[in-house]
Structure formats: C-alpha cells, structure tokens
Amino acid sequence: MATLHDDEMSKQERLSHKIQVSKRELETVFDAIDIMICIVDRHLNIVRVNKGYAGFVGQDIKALLGRKCHEIFFNCNSQCIDCPCLTTFNTGLATDKKRFVKKTPEEIRHFEVKTFPVFDSSGKLIHVIEFIKDVTDEKRMLEQLIRSEKLASIGVMTAGIAHEMNNPLSGISGTAVNLLEKPEKYGLNDKGVNRVGAILESAARATVIMKDLLHLSKKNESVHIKVDLNKLLIKTTNAIHLEGAGDIQKKFILDESLPLVYCDPSRIDQVLINVVTNSIQSIIEKKKQMQADGKKYVGRIVIGSQNQHTTVLITVTDNGCGISPDIRRKIFDPFFSTKPAGQGTGLGLSVCHRIIEEHQGKIYFDSIDETTKFSIELPIERISSTTNK
Image (cartoon, rainbow, N blue to C red; front, side, top):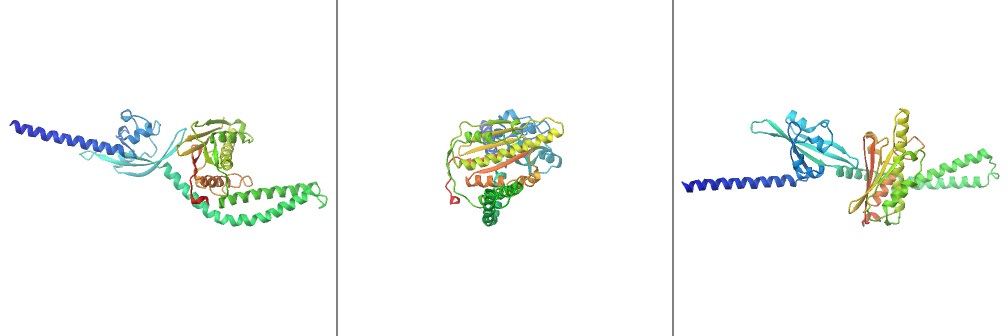
C-alpha cells in the first residue's frame, strides 16, 4: 500500500512539475512577444500585462494590476471613445485593427489595437485580451515612400520646364537691368522706372521658383562637413525675424550628448529656416484668430534635439493653428500652400523633403489638437549610396 501511495504521490509531483514548466513556458512566450498585451475585465481593470506593455508605460507589472487600462496607457480619466475592449464585451466578438493616437509633451505616437474575447468553461465572457502594436514608424515610412515616389515623378516633369524657363527669365532680368541703368536713354520717367523695377522683382521671384524646381528634380553638389547641430539650431532660430515673432516664447531642449553630424550645413539651415518660419507664421495666425475672439493666447515653440546613437532627431513643436486632417497628405506636395495667392509658392516643404532625402534622413510631422510637431532624423555619419552619384 505504501508503494502505491508513493506511486500516486510521484504521479502528482510529476504532473505538478509539468504544469509548472508549462506555466513558465507560457509566461516566457507571453513576455517575449514584442507586441504589447493587456488583459482586462468587464470594468476595464487590468488583469495581466506582458513586459512589453509594462516597459512602454514605464511601470512594474504588479503596480499595473487592478488599474484602469485607459488611465495607464492614455493617461485619461474616462474610457476611450469607441473602446475596442467594450465592443468585444458587448458583442462577444473580436475587433480588428482599430487606430488610436497617444500624445504627450514629448511625442505623438500611433497604435493599432486588436481585441479578443476570453470565455470561461460555462461560456461566459470574463476577460478581453488587447493586442497593441506601435505603428508610428511604419506609418512614417509609408508616408515617406509615397512622398518620394510622388516627388520623383514630378521631378522628371519639372526639370524640363525649369530649364526652358530660365532662358526667357534671364532675358527679362537683363533687359530690365539695362532699362534701369539708363532710364533717360529709354525715355523712362519715375513711374516707368518703378514699373520696370516691379518687372525685375517679379523676374527675380520667378528665378527663385525655378531654382527650387530644379532642386526638386536633381541632386546638386553639396559640401558635407562635421556640424554641431545644437549651435546651428540656436543660430538659425534666433536669426529668423518676422513681424509679431518677438512675442512668441521659444524654448530649447537640446541633448548635450549630441555628436557632430556629417551634413551640408547650408542646406540643413535652409530646412530649419523653412520649418521654424512655418511654425512662427502658424502661431501669428492663431494669435490673430484668438484676438478677434477676445481670447488670450501665448504662442510657444519648442526646439529639441536628441541623440539616437546612429541618428540624431531634431524636433520643432508649436501650438499654432495646427494642420487640418484633410490637407495633411498634401503638406510635402510641390505647389501646395495654405497661404493666399502670391504669398507662397508651395515649394518650401517639398524642397525640405528633398534635402533631407539627399542626406538619407527622414522628415515627418504630427498634428493633434492644434499642436504640430515636425521631426527631422539625420544619420550621424554619411551613408555611402549609389544615389549620391
């Protein structure tokens, strides 16, 4: 009998050991999945999370248990609008690929969420498993690819136009200069001189536009050197003087560990001038709107840099008018401008995109609740590529 009892105990111990091993294996798999996983009950209280989820929110797993998922992940007191977990609890069905945005003072990130129901042995729905995937980088890469393909096709078309236009523009400018140098010879009075001057200014403006078009269509020779981007950021930002810009609060959050970056400083300076100027103009426009409504408003721009080991990140964030959702896909398109006719060519950001592309970097933006953030990523060292030919 003792031997039988010992055999039964041995079976139980082996079974218990197998269960413990299986549990550890499942927990290891659960924590090893790079997608964030959160299990909640009907009250949206967290029952279990994996290490990926805990690492993202920056808290220990045990500290998260029993807390509301929306309070932890989105830092809000009320449940999310169109909450997929509640949808699954109400319908008993899984949800697929719902998109959410999380905004913090430091960044804006995009997530894809899927939920799956968990039933007990009696068929009662007790928990919902939430799979959360950070798709921010994927979204930006897709947008970058679309913009690159679009600019490439436009570049072929505009190259010929720009070259053909340069010759007549040079003729117009040269003739106007001759007229202004000897107005008496050509019978010009003061009114005629002013009109010829206006012709020369218009020709000069058209020439600048043609140069921008040529920059879109081909890669020009540039001089790459080691550059202190923090100093360039401060110098460029402080050098921009627009009417009304003096009232804007400017803040620099610069990473002191930022290494020297191999780039063309004049072209990166051109990008920074364009992006910061757009932020200032957006704030000035917002201030006019707020003053018209009798409301107080303080414009703010935050310029930041961050060392990302192989790349550096430059950010320009403002609390201006924001970018309307219906035009966000057009922001980097050539000739697209929100400014009134005659006040903008719509080439600024498309040229910026081309310059950053030539540096084998990325430029992208996020705009939520009238907070707009432009981000520029540049490789620290020059990357050899056949595209540099």
